[in-house]
View 1: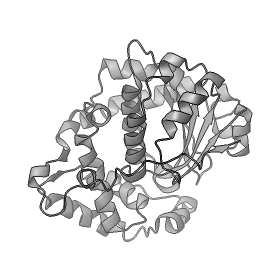
View 2: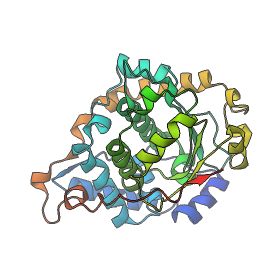
View 3: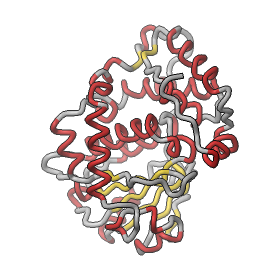
Length: 310
């Protein structure tokens, strides 16, 4: 099947244990989902085999679970358009990307390890942009990772949020409802799995705002989330060589990573130009309403008790 990559031996072995994947059977599973999409009049979803394979890996090759996740991914666009719609690669998006808000170092943690993403939210200009635009860019990059990187779809993501130099003006733009919808998108919709999230360099004056905003997330999180009092404590969880040189690692310079992924954004310009057609038409849905309408995915209130402080 065009577009599918054979996995290196170590990653293929991990795909069996982590994703329940048998490379000899994956084409059959992909065709099953492509056929289901074609026969679902309410659902206009991409049928790219690489993206469908990422959904299958995320769901351990459960076809029914993959159907739910794909449905969620496209139906949420009706409720979260400020992040999931208008995803064209234009000068405004490239200018924001060039600021280095999100950096994907060139190598995974190990040959069979997760991919690292670093977000530096101090680089958002609050007078010209906002967190929603930054999240839109992040989720575009995550879809490209799902298409391009088997480590990301098999081993998951190691997400580092650097709050260094984030101002109070910037922090006040993160409202609880934005974070709640973002959590639902990550937990219930994405074709990729977050393994760990680490927050470093939080300013003391921002702690109260952070605690308030995160109080709207559920008590039990599906990934490890650690707030580090000292940024160097991050390396108790992640090899230093997995981070960029600016963070004391050896995984290339941030400028190199930005150049590479800017090229990928430009290469996918036509792909993303057609993005607005992919969604759900709830008037054509027969049977049960989507998970957002029924409130199935809305029950994310609760305290943030599983947060670790390192």
